[in-house]
Image 1 (tube, rainbow, N blue to C red):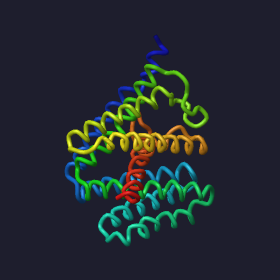
Image 2 (cartoon, rainbow, N blue to C red):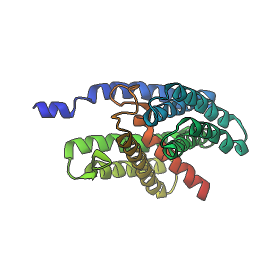
Image 3 (cartoon, helix red, strand yellow):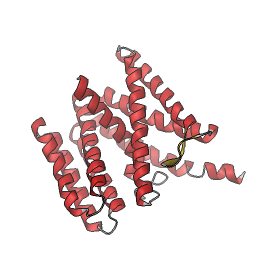
Image 4 (cartoon, one colour):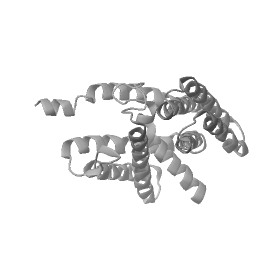
Length: 258
């Protein structure tokens, strides 16, 4: 009995935090424009703050400064012409390389991923509308929630125990199935081809890859959570790593195929 209780011990704080995040994120997504852009920019800034704290915990002041500069950069990129997007987003990464004196390559890679994915969210909401934004969010949420409950209930072989010891093949595959269902429903509602379901599974895999990448980073730096900002979830990076993976993949897909 005690083992069963321990297995679900984090469910209540996790659920309450999720309600708050859904409410705030739902409002910003519905409102769009500057409200949505500012929310994404703040989240990106928070994740850069967490990233620096994980890689160089002694650089607390630099973490705050780089987080603030990154948030401003994402917001500016959303307002400037496309030609300026990459230079503006690259600026805080370049600044961070001079501040983070160890594991610079990890900072550069993860920071660029965070900022490009954040801009991808802004582009998707602004150019394609709220329905497509909700589709992407739905894929990541369905992948995460289904994987969480299926992994807890079914268990079985671990997906990649050296990097992410809690993930199981049952949870991973259940996430793909849930994403395919989300894609099929979206395609039916929007009058699109069911190739959207295939794309949804691809984004689900990218979401899981983002989760695994962040897990590998935490394992390398010896931390349990990226921060303690969100009860039951850890930090912003812990919660939105899957969103970052899916958004980055969608941005790459649209850049390649249009």
